[in-house]
Length: 306
Image (cartoon, rainbow, N blue to C red; front, side):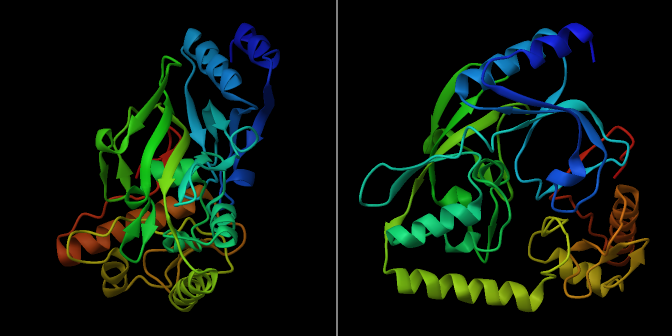
């Protein structure tokens, strides 16, 4: 990194900077080398100034949520990781009917807990999803037939030029595990539309969904959730299992015995082991079923060929 850029970042107001930050600490897989720096703005002005400075030096950056769909190279990544966990953790009720404004850094589990306390239903599908609100909206996270695009009514986005824009639902293009946005746009906050519901009913739905997850998915070992998108009319996990790869292991990385679309870290897995399993699964499914599996996760690192 250019020493002048490093000095400017170090002295930005309202910004916490950590150098050579090991991303294994910030990803649910618990693998990956360091980012050049981890930047945690404390407010919108700090985020805007951070983006302006990085762009001035044409230095790459990416938004880091809870790291629940991220695979980082063992060698790390020459880029700034921008986390909104410190300054963007607000949850505001806009109306008694269930309209909320939520910071992008709020963990989904915390938001769901708040909704339960307020008696607001509609977010139960997020039970067990380990991401943050911003990351979940960016990838349109969901389960059991529901997704963030079903409850999101607007987002506040910081563009690559550091401009701040609010986009209404009719301006947003959600699709399966995706929201169409410029590559380096950063979601700052989101408006959600939920509905009043009895806390006992919400709690029962959450308990049911968590029970279904625990019965069918690995629960107590590090993973990144679903690795592949489900192809139209089928399930990636079924295809991987039918190709004979459930339980297949390389190093400490393993295609989970419980679910073919999960790769778990059994202890000291490396990113290269996970990549090798991804490649093996893709090749086996393509050969047996002529289906090309698409990744649901994001991969960072120039040496990561998947």
